[in-house]
Length: 244
Image (cartoon, rainbow, N blue to C red):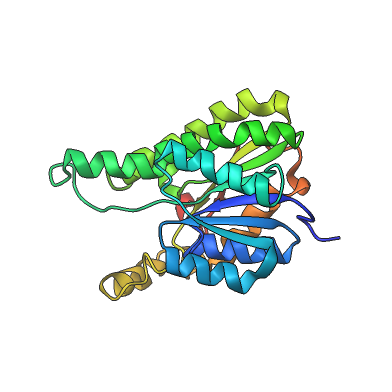
């Protein structure tokens, strides 16, 4: 039996990078997956590749009404939602003095507020399903310091995960956070950052950056019933960089 047989999942930021890797693996493991993203062309293309068990919805994760519509469409197409992967996020590397209020609020809205909105929107559907798993993708910068805005929001996701886990436990809903290190995604492998990333990789104990699929393995475990006694916890996948 496949690990996510007949489960219904919503994955945000699923048009490329880690989100796409999660969606591909989830469908392969038997899930029915709603992929959401603002990148419509890429999202539709991936959904078509994945076939009848995938549905793409263009979705701005900072909009509560759009969250309600995504959950409703997921239920209409596949049934009550069992899994939510809050994967969508952006990064920013500016000093406090260089960061505008608008930039700060934008990164907090996308990285932090969206997780609150998604969690709130999906709980009633998971109650219909008699339980579920919410996986919040944070970062190693939710464990250790980094750039202003990004670090703040990723620490907030870690804390929100614990608060939601306490509240949702009696519904049979588990909530955990995943903290990736440096992952080979389009966001960090652009020409202007690629050399710096490859140099940084030499400081990682495992001496390399990770493939998105290596994060997917952990997300899959937390989404599945294999992690049935794990909730309110953070799971680090970083090649050991936070221990040095």
